[in-house]
Image (cartoon, one colour):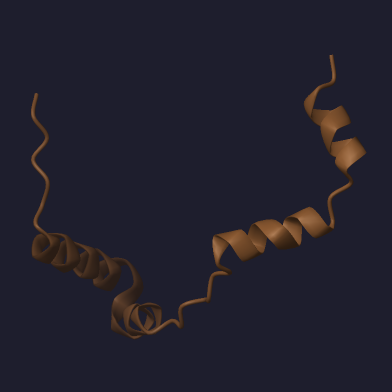
Length: 65
């Protein structure tokens, strides 16, 4: 069976309709205007994770028998 996807316009229209039905106009408006949280660029995030990493503990955890 072939899946038929909605166009972007249909998808947005349906999503807003559902939000309005479930949340009402005020909460839908609040949701639509929520600020986007800035994501840390992935390489920088990985380097920050590595700073706190104990290599020996990490390997012991990965390669435990």
